[in-house]
Amino acid sequence: MDDRRTHGAKPRAFRLEASARSRLVHIGARIAPYVAVAALMTASAARAADTLTLAPGLSFSDDSSDSFPIRGDHLGDAEPQPGRPAVMFFGAAHCWNTNREAERLVALYPKYQDRVSFIIVDVNHPSSSQRGLLDTYYQGSIPTLVVRAPDGALVYSQAGETARTRGDTRTLDSLIGKALGR
Image 1 (tube, one colour):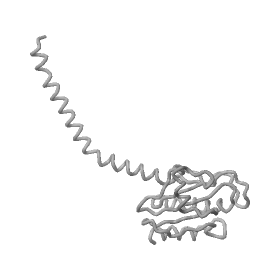
Image 2 (tube, helix red, strand yellow):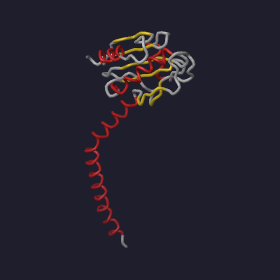
Image 3 (tube, rainbow, N blue to C red):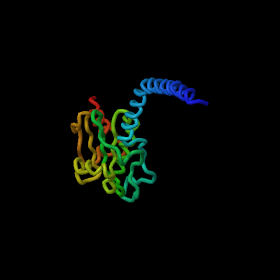
């Protein structure tokens, strides 16, 4: 094999490589918007707690429950999202008032999960990203509930339960509705 034949083959191989690159760039340009939307959806999902459920074995009449009352995904990394209403719940284990308010919140979660960011903070074991929320919103008593409108304005920020009877979600439902502009 002489050098001219070997040298002559290189441009052809390069052209195929350039053509393949061109096709990849074209395909990449077509799928880039879909990748960007998927990334945004993933990022926003991780910024709110989801799949909220009550911890098993909670007591609603005494302080004997050892577990934090709400379980779910992304509890430690949830944070308020600009342009989206938020419900922030601050509570602790060993508190039947916290358990009853958690029961109300979890009951309303399926109704609002796609439109409201739920932020759940265990005041005794906050994640590092939740410490700022504690400093800003937590009033020192449990449970504390904060409801914010999409523009960040406070709709509600108080300690204590939102109802006098267990399972009554009307007041909490109304507060979330106000945050949504209803």
